[in-house]
Image (cartoon, rainbow, N blue to C red; front, side, top):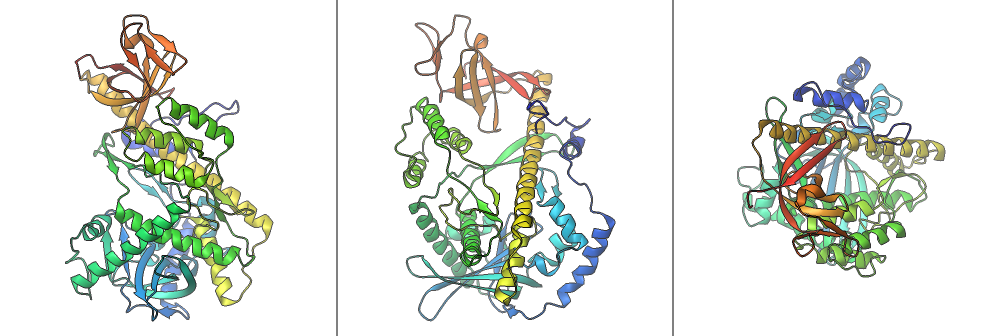
Length: 518
């Protein structure tokens, strides 16, 4: 968030760590509670589960969900079968939120206003009341739930040769965690976490979906999709709201399996509508500007990394794959991400550069994203033969609002993480018990070098006066620092540091090289 002069404004921390989230929510004007009318309507519309209407009955099919262990809302489920010709038919079943949230209702107006759920490290600010998000819309196991199903038929080469859509009623047979699915992918079993199927059938179903997902992933990367798998940081808090550490969640094969299935469903729906002349809230991701590519070249040259003709998406994708085992991969990935344009919602253009998709939109998370809900309504109108078109002006207004709210939510989530990290650094400094951090130099300047601490996703400055008691020279030729005839510091070098200063107001951390020989 910026002020009138274009300066970045930082949200203040709470009076205590427990109040940090409330302070951030107030700064970013996030709603704390649902209006009473919305709560009453949420309770009333829950009864709509008893009036499903005409639907495809899939309750006997083996359908399962896969989510984080701590998840409470399950908005997507999977199935996989084989047709008479031996083709694989992937079913992606998404919670039918549109059955409960009708256009113009109090629920709909509030969902539009919020536009997205916001995920903080200690709480969620949901788009929909929990009567829906954790209740009748959540695809919990062994309960009848209403869904919008996308059926995609793939041939042996992994090419989608057919797509079909239907309002359905499902009964999830199992709720798996990513860890359980990963165990099966690695040759284990989920025995004890299923109902109605023998363990071998469950394991075989998961591995079949994984096999298809791997094929789809290979095809996507061959088409020029960018592989920027950076581990997600999950902040750990104690009972007082103080940060105790960060857990890095790897994007392993279990996550990739779900991701590929959702990408396929999003593409299928977007293609069905857009290719038939129905404009939608597309998820647009444009290629990077040439100036950004030039800047990226210069930055990576400082790391000793050479680029080919990365203006070509396929070459760009090959480059990213080639550096996966580079010791500075995380730093390089951040540089690449900064050179990319932001993905946003658009009603006039379509296409996703990062995913290498001509058609793409968000369909698979209507519990937490309003654009997905709008797409559900348009697809429902399409398959029922009704008018699926939305006035261009209204669609443009939705796109602008959804993009703005998404950015606001992302800024708020980052701000709270930053506050928690600064509190950790400040507490460490005040305790006078120095902690050694293994850091990487990410940039050199005449006044010092910037370092990043991968284990905390924290960055800061080591001032040139702290690097050496001798004169330190900045070398423009290779963007390095050095003592004539002595030590040098370059981008990519590893350095062990201690916290020297924490400035909460300016959001700045200074470090000093560790003097204890580590």
